[in-house]
Structure formats: C-alpha cells, structure tokens
Image 1 (cartoon, rainbow, N blue to C red):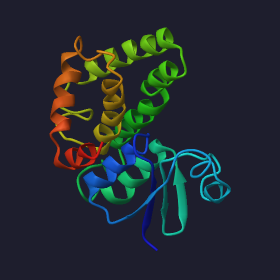
Image 2: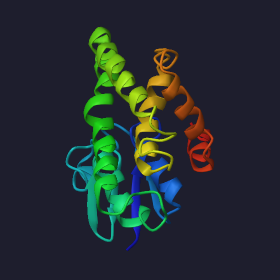
Image 3: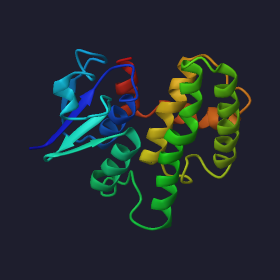
Image 4: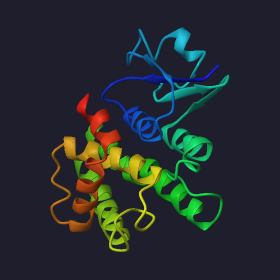
Length: 194
C-alpha cells in the first residue's frame, strides 16, 4: 500500500515534508486544502477526524499529529539511515525534543497567531533560552550528529523566523544551528518550495 502524505503548504505539515525529504522515503503526496473543501470536509474526517494536516497513511494505518509522525518515521525508517537513535537513552532524548517542539515551543507562535502576542513572546523567549543552552553542548540537539529531532524542531524555528519576531539575534547557538540545518540539501528542497 505504501505511504500517503496529506499535505497543505504553509502549514505544520512542512515538518513531515522535511522529515520525508531527509529520509528519502517513497511516498504519494495528496495536496489537501485547508478548510471546508479539504481538511474540514466529511471525506477528510474519515481519514483524520481532527481535520488537520499533517496526516500520513502507511500500509493502511493512519497517523496524525506532527510529533507522532516524526517519531513514527524515525523509528520506522530513520534508525537504519542514521537519522534517528536506536532504542536507548539517545532515543529518549530525541523524543523529548520532538515532543517539546510541539508542546512548548510551538505554543508560542500559536498564542501570537491567536492574538496573545505578549504571552506568545514570553513562551518563545524562554524556549529560545532553553534551546540555546542545549546547543552549547554540540552542533545539534543530540550532540554532534544531526537527527530528525533537529529536522522537526527546525520547522518550528523556521515558522518563528517567518513571523519576523527577531528572537534569534540574542541566541548565538540557535542562530548557528539554524544556519547549519538550513544548508541541508533535503531542507533546501522543501523550503525552496515555500
């Protein structure tokens, strides 16, 4: 059956597009419009009752939520490709950063989008500080080896950069990491289409 990726440009589905590009996994892309004629339609509700992207279907199993998808892709394809840790402490660390991307870092831009700019900036200020401290320890989240945890978190930082919030200037480790990650060929391919 293969892998089908339900995608909408300029959405959080970019994180899944980036992971699939890094992994070079064959897949079918189903461009899915946001709103009543796409993600909020009755037909799409049968695939994802939340009415959101990203969503993937792999060999008959549907998975939604970008963090869950990143973890699934990492475990399924990433270990053998050297982009996701095997089970053990490093895997736990990768999971921590993937989930943190969604449950902490990603909350900041959403608050701003919803009109709570002060609350969103407060969350992002703390999140950038945490990330900057982590990146003092190595070039990437897990040390000196790039992983899908970097791919996933990068797409959230990219989102904040697109919002022109100027959060990176006072976080040199994040800024250096961002530049390194931006140079990855798979991400250039995905971001080039933005």
